[in-house]
Amino acid sequence: MKTKERDVNGVHIIAAEGKITIGNGDQELGEAVRGALEKGHLKIILNMAKVTTLDSSGLGELVGCYTSIKHRSGELRICCLNSRIFNLMQMTSLHSVFEVKDTEEEALAGF
Amino acid sequence: MDVNLERENHRLARLVESIRIINSTLEEGALLESILTVARQELEVERGTLYFVDAAKHELWSRIASGMGEMEIRLPVGKGLAGTVAATGEASLINDAYQDPRFDSSSDERTGFLTRSVLSAPIRNRDGKVVGVLQLLNRKDGPFIQADLDFLNSLSEHMALAIENTLLHRSQLERDRMERELRLGRDIQSRLFPDAPDRITGLDVAALCVPCFEVGGDCYDFIPLEGGRMGISIGDVSGKGVAAALVMSSLQTALRMAAPLIDDPASLMTQLNSLIHGLTGGRKYATFFYGAYDPNTGTLDYVNAGHVPPLVAHAGGVQALASTGLPIGLFPDNPVRAQRVILEPGATLLLCTDGILEAGDPMLDDFGETRWKALAATLGGLPAGQALANVFETVQAFEADTPPSDDKAVVVIHRCS
Image (cartoon, each protein chain N blue to C red):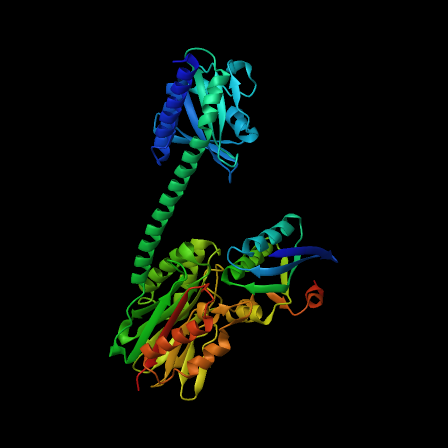
């Protein structure tokens, strides 16, 4: 998995690309989010438009990111999920935990 | 005989004998001893240490005798005399150790030994890579000389081969040990999967779990409850392999203990959530379905903590028992709602883990919910064993040559008409 990071209006956007699966992207995702937190970013958007696969370990890491950000009184928004990943979120009821938006613009709005 | 020829013959004989000694073992401690024996015999030194290079950790390591038996010592490549030799690949020959700034005298201070001279030689393999460092202390009959280094250099490749063989042997032994433990783990885990209960409950039940590795994170269970009721569970711990299997075993044991004591499935799930979160701190979690089935009424009071929705196939179609809460173990508090469904006579309850839905190539097409529901619709009236076989045959045919990437568990419960 690769990430590209940029800031828009004080919001840190992490665009992930590739797989987020056990031993292949799950740790990198956590490191990217923790790295952003270390730099003081508290408003974070995870753009998953180019994430092809997310497995149970990837989902666990996503929850770990969410918890780390919450502990620092920050906020995580997730956007641009493909239908397979959105279904996984729904199946596990995690769409009720994460703030999930269809587009990056929607995620940015009102942050 | 010519004196030079005699000397050369003697040197060759020593070399051959040294090579024989060095290649006489695959055991790490014995190799260390045999190399040091050669060095002590041929070079007449008081002490010697053989360091192995750990390229992954950029360290040298060795075992030395201590008051408590053997202990492992490690030092970074580049530090001290041996570390410098490993880093540069250049041998060093020092006949007055205390005048050399690279010499670390702390070992002498600890042990009372007085180091005078030190010869540190790299041990290179055929590719020229340094795989070890041989360090010899205090030549007994004078200073170290170039001929000592030449002798060690002529043995270097043989020592390297012996070291590499020893390390390979060591990793093979470690692999063998782990495989034995995994097989033991698999035996233990397979005993955690219960036999399907008999028809006393008015149900025809079949179940199978196929782990992707030796041990896995999928589980199912059937637990006798008060009043002839039966607890039915299926779960999937995130990740795979040993860590997932450990969490699964804890979860299954806790369920077996708690289910007969806690009637309300939602309260039971709260307890299990606390247990798993306490064990893993949220780093591992389980999607989990649990239902208490009453054979007198056909009611199933259930909770679905983020698990693949079980399907009820009956004459009227297929009903999915969607999630009623978050997976267990993710958060310290996790309210899960209980729901009720009635299994009519002739209906079949099908439970699976996501290894079924994700079978196939996820980049192209996986088995998915739609196919799973379509398959369920064809299984309604079949005996449970036949339905289970159909599921695995259909999924395996779909997977074709794609190697499985996840554990698969399926439970089929048919309420007899």
